[in-house]
Length: 525
Image 1: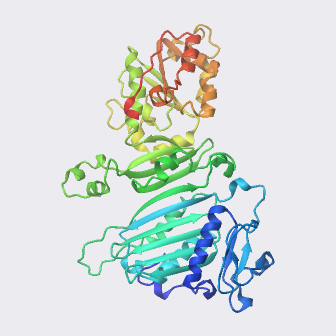
Image 2: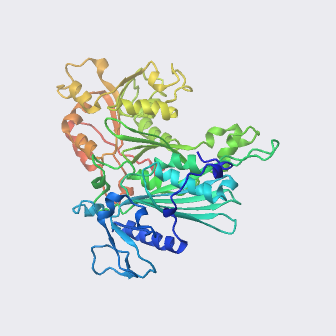
Image 3: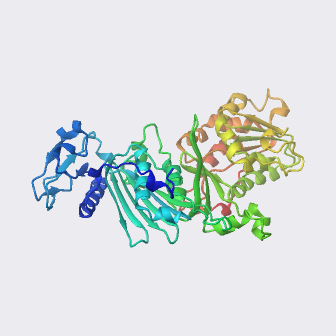
């Protein structure tokens, strides 16, 4: 950790060969950005007067060649049409294009992280040595080798610093009068930079210190950030760069959270790869609908409306499955209420209910609000995801305020039966071969079956939706007045007229459902 008061005393010795003259550093920066964006594989290093102290490993010298005096090629070394830039001294250029020549699709791909931190110690922000040390410490910990770095003072009003590393470029700007540091990190790497956030906060989010004991406490540092994928081209697809399937930062996770600057106090709470999916939990405040000031006021005890009703000003919680948004704290009630209550109120006396999926527990919560319910069977294939939701999303399965509930968590309610199995196979095994509902005890049928699985646009789930065996098992598993409800994707009014319900109409008519009603929950959009 960099200490704002003591960092001058413990600055690590830095190889002087890594310090460029400012005019050289500017050229190095330009060349580094060009090589990063175009995937040229060009590394530029200063040639010291003492040829025996090159700032590069000796075993790599065989891959270097000297460029003639006054000439420096800054574009692709294999392109004979490349331009030359004149310099006043001799340079070496290292050709780093040792990647697989067939891997042209991956050239130039990378990740960019833009970070603003406010309420930072002003002395730290005005210390060139501290900033250099923090920048080097951050990237060296992640095996990025420094090529050049420098800081330039802006007349004691902060610093502008640049670091050029192998496979990474970092720029940072400090504003001591406002306690703000702005950081831009660009890497030529397939791995996302989300893991850097905690390290950036640890290195740069140095709190302001009170001068006198009676001074008011300063607000803690607060970080705002966006993460962007660069050069992940649509014709190749992100999965081409990530062995084993989808990137953990693609899809709605990137579009809705990572790349959006309008989210304050954004934080990845947890990321877990279960046996079946990648799960992300995030917290954030969407400044379009809520303010950080109101949230901070809700934490006080000043008697304000915010402090008396803190539940209205909390950070939003969002869970993503394989990069796609699944549920959020301020949006889940609308979805789950719309899914559950229409079906439950349609049945005259629902006693036994089945839930397919519903791992967060919110569908279970809504079902248990009906006092006629005697048993709810929930089947979700991913038991680890359910446990994660109990830990990180307890509000979703909160039954503490439900009349008649026997436990704080809906999962522990006496009426709940939770199975961690393949729900589709669970129904097929029990009901697929039932002939006119014979051979099954009356109490084993369900009055309501609720499908709370993934969108049918998911390839895996689509195959299950169109399996007539499964549809038959749903029909056979219902009581005489039984009701089946499922969310089947976006309404045609929101898909440019594409009707995603046609295949469902056909399937359910074939198995014998008497009627089918489609309703839109417009408040979900």
